[in-house]
Length: 282
Image (cartoon, rainbow, N blue to C red; front, side):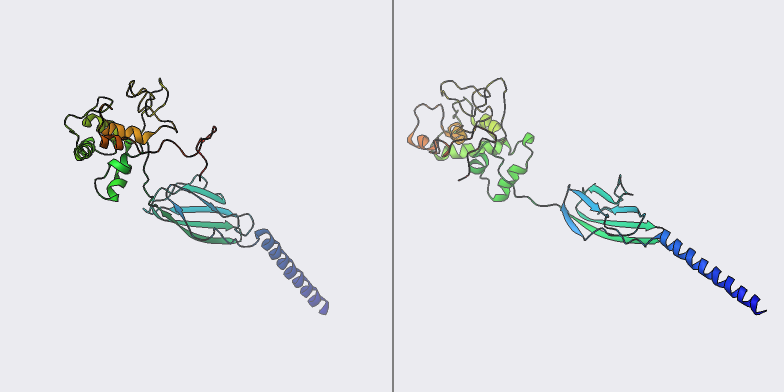
C-alpha cells in the first residue's frame, strides 16, 4: 500500500515539474513585454519633415502601429505606419499628436508624443533686384509699408506704378524739375519709368550681355544694354538715380549733378573669379 502511495506521489511530482518546465518554455518563447519608446516632445518649423524613431523600444518580435493626428484632427497618411521609424511632412501649424502601439506575444505597450509645428515670422528683407527702389524711393510712410513692398508677388508689381509715379513727381518737383514734361535718358516719362522700376526684379534678354547700365550714354537701348540683368560691378544705384533725375543728361543743373550719383565709384574689394564671385567680407 505504501508502495502505491509513493508511486502516486512520484507521478504527481513529475507532472508538476513538467508543467512548470512547459510554463518556463512558454515564457521564454513569449519573451518580455515590449516597452514603446519614441522620445520626448519637440518642435519643428512648418513644412519640415518630421522623423520619428521607435528603434529603442524593448522586447522581442515587436510589431508597430503608428497613428499621427494633425492639428485639424485629421489622420496623417503614413506610408510606413508599421515600421519602427516613420516620417511625415508637417504642413499645418499647431500640435500633431503621435501614438505608437508596440505589440508582441508577451503584451502591448503604448507611447505618445506631441510635435509642435511653428510657422515662423521671417524678417522681410529688400529683394534688391534693383537696389534703392525700396530703400530710397518707396517712402510711403512706415516700416510696414516697406515690408509690404517685398511681400508683394513680383509678377503683380511690388508697388502700384501710379503710386511710384507720384513719388517721382514729388521728388522732381522738390528739386525744381517739371514732372509733367520730364523725360529721362531713355526718353521715358514718369508714368512709364514707374512701370519699369516699380517691380523689384531683373529683366533678362539673353540675346545681349547682362548689364544694368550702358557704357556709352549716347547709345542706350532699354532691355538690351540697359536694365538687362546686372553684373556685380554695375553701378545700379547710379543708373536708377540717372533715370529719376538726370533728364537727357544735357544741361544738368548743379542739383541734378549732385543727385545722379551716389559718389561710390566701385566695390572696395576685387570680386572673385570663381563662384559665388563676391569679394571676401571685411
